[in-house]
Length: 279
Image (cartoon, rainbow, N blue to C red; front, side, top):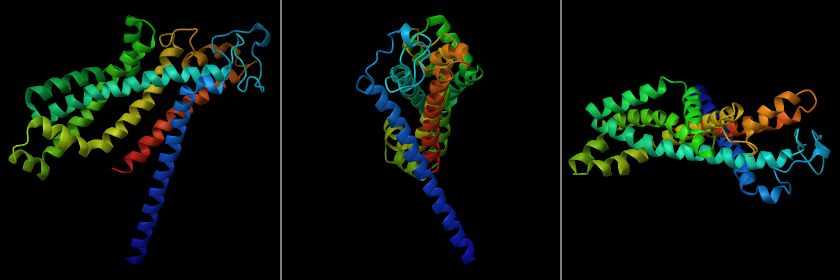
């Protein structure tokens, strides 16, 4: 018994350290991307749109640490400035979908009845369409832009926040503190936003990190397919698309945006895993 107890404690300790490491690494990576996007003019002196025919497909060097692309544009500056648009679109997508989906889930889970039926039906209808296909349809109708990508992410991700909030609300509604609050005369809005919502904070933070991770992939996919950030403005997916014909002679053009997308997605996934372990 004692051996099993101490073994369980060691496992719990190691799991806690693993979650802590995931949180620090994920936060550091995300902070690196956000800081790089904000401080892009201070980090690189090259204009991401300026072409130079004298250094087409140049290998990495002191003047161009990540090399240049097929038009002689500096890869480092394009990655940094591309991060601005990508993270902006993803940030708006996460905040917008949470701002709409969470209240819908709270109302549906608390009041149930016809309200819940309508919310669940709308969410099921949106979830029946693959996320990327729905985002592509919105981008095709409205045209490529940062605003279009942001709107597409908001529409695509609303059901995820609404469904998880609804489930948590139904579970918390049965808890004694909820019943006592109702007996004490607490109004429905106050109960939902002051008592129930704070108790699902960790779950919603995990969902936000997961949505951010998927938002990076959707944004990159739209740009790769030509329905994201319009050229010549830099975007990670667009850089990856333009690098395909030059894989044999200048592989770094695909390697750089590919690694950046991978690390950005990884940062959100690490944050989600760390917060999930706390719940």
